[in-house]
Amino acid sequence: MTARPRVWVSRPTFPDIVARLDPYFDVVAEPREVMFSPAELATKIADCDAVIVGLKERIGAAEVAKAPRLRIVANLGVGYDNLDLAALTAAGVAASNTAGALDESVADFTWAMLLGAARRIGEAERWLRAGQWHGTRFTDWLGIDVRGRTLGILGMGRIGQAVARRAVGFGMQVIYHNRSRVPQALESECRARWVDKDELLRTSDFLVLALPLTPESRHAIGAAELARMKPTAVLVNIARGGIVDDAALAEALAQGRLAAAALDVFEGEPVVNPKLLELDNVLLSPHIASASLDARRGMTTMAVDNVVALFGHGPHAGHPPTILNPEVLAAA
Ligand code: 8YV
Image (cartoon, rainbow, N blue to C red; front, side, top):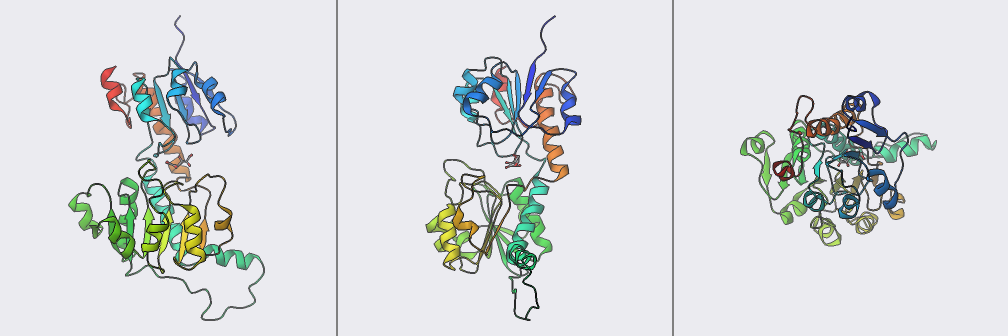
């Protein structure tokens, strides 16, 4: 009897969804959240035909060289800066992400953070819990309204678009910067206008970052960009740590050159720049924008679907739904 293909799942997800692999594969699912060293990771994937991994697992040329049977890396996330896609493609290994499974949930969370920063919710809650509420004056806790203001979006992919759609209900104008323009119907639906990056920085009252981390987008918002923003503006990063120069941001916030920030992602996370932690005008969350039950279950389903389909099973047999390097399938 030929051995069944082997799948490694790098973190505990939803056992009922992962169980859909059982009819076709031998599955090894990690019972605990573990941060694997590169050597441990290489050992884990060495004899696998497929792996389902998260952003903490960095897979590139060195790892695939040690995994001769590997056919697919299914990433539990829409961003895939943890994968060296060129190296995977060169080795004939397919890669998939979870585009479409989390966009709406991340967009909801983006608005929670944007409004939370604008209306100082984190700061007010800390103050209340510290037992400092002995009364408030009429002019205490003044925040910033969103209505009538301009929302800027850097990176108008699926998440950026979902954020833009919600802006209509808040009565905002939307401007965006992206390599390519979105379809005109969507621009009209969201009253969105393409602008160059300079106009985006200078005009936005709220600037949401929704672009992938690539060598080109690293520090897309650094000291020079922050200096071009309005001192009354609020910056929201739900994209990736590294897109913002966190040290430059902390300085701008401390000096009142930017009104506030809301950050779900950080350079070097889970370590957060201590200067950010000292500031009241920044709302912080631990990279949880996709952490709704529906989104995380949807992401797991999508990763499983990609693996099952690549091996010719299930409803998408032969056509994994969210492959990042389809040229690998064409060559197979
Ligand atoms: C993570 C994310 O995948 O989709 C992405 O790119 O950053 C998140 O959804 C999630 O935090 C699990 O690591």
